[in-house]
Length: 113
Length: 110
Image (cartoon, rainbow over all chains, first blue to last red; front, side):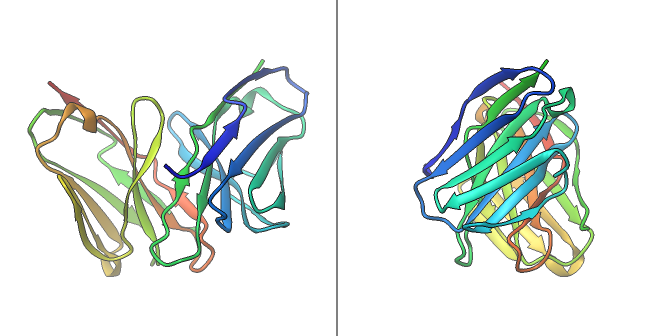
């Protein structure tokens, strides 16, 4: 299994509070991604990173920010959590070689009350 | 941006049956992958297949890039094949930024 660890695995928080989710990889891969999964929407890209301090927006980036200060860590922050951000969040990694697949972490289930 | 559509949205099979899942995309792509999400929520990469055909056991995939579709074949289905199957395509060539279809939910009955 690809070495990807997401933390926490579960979190319940209140509306308006900031929340940070962490993704840690041991594969030294260049690309890291944050997706959210909701019923009826599949997986939607929030942000991704193509290197240390290099990030770009995805399909649903409003209300989220990211940071990548080290190759192995990619943080997702909900600046002021809302109930619409209740979701399962997945981190993924990918290398740069041809034929380099996406590998996913086990997800973080976030509930905003 | 590129659109990705999968069909059928839901599929119920008897164990041992064969099935074909389809992924259509609205623009040319350099990278396409298929994933299986098991009932516990884990996402497993099945194929990296921007073009051509690949096989892995009972599963095979074909991508016809010029016609903008990919097919995933499951033969002799087993209950462990149940879950959701996703295809993902690179949003813009060279970015390694992947967009997912909404998936096909497969249930295999014993």
